[in-house]
Image (cartoon, rainbow, N blue to C red; front, side):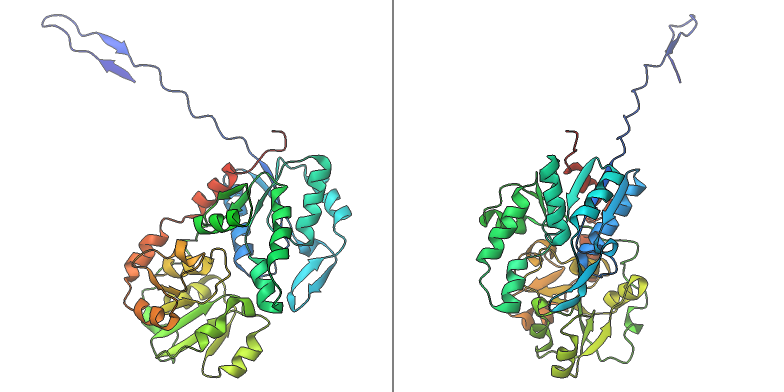
Length: 365
């Protein structure tokens, strides 16, 4: 481009060259990322959705992502939760998979058999690694067995402190982990598919045949999710459960008036959210609660207890938090559905994946 200068009267104009253009930004080198997780397909839960979506976003940006899950090993069903398969004797085959992939960075997502095996390999070879904290197993263990969570917290602290950083989904969770003696916690938020999860123009026609208002639960149907606290509420309209799990049969017998719809994915799941009037999140043990964000992206407000997860996800005007879950569910009927979507717009998966990548630690240093 040329820049023309103004000439004095009667003199020819001068033409000066444009200043040199700034050099183009240096491309970010591609990364070979290995993620190891005991939660992976065909499981359906927030951990799997998070890891899969982050991996896809990183690959679109040019990285190479390999996820090693139990589906590549001989497995046994998890006691009291047969839908979850646990890898048996994973260390030797896992070592061969790692060598074949030759990663630049390693992230261990869970504290199951695969997570512990990968942790051991990293310590053996002095490879730095990061971890993420998805599930409050001490509280789950207490809910299922009544055992004190103190030993479980000590075991989890030992697992994560061996790494270079533990990713926590919210500031509340970070503070909670630090209260249990974790010293390397960093905040890493979650994201939502804003194209899939969106308000529906025919919202009133969804969930046909069910009296309104519709109060919805989405997630695993298991004791630690505290679903009975929702189903026992005296609420008008209909209560709907989308999901499946080991507690479904007993809850169906106990609450025959509730509608159990089973698992839904993709557009069917988005329509389930969009067609509801309130999404009720009764869990007290989740670290984030991705379903709340998905619900708000569809314009549906949230009712929940004021605990870790909801405190960080539910913004003013997008739902109601209260120890009185019935009062929260009824009050959430008056929330602004447009405000719910606007709040979810701040949680794009691309930003989540980029933040995840920045927190990784390279093996080469």
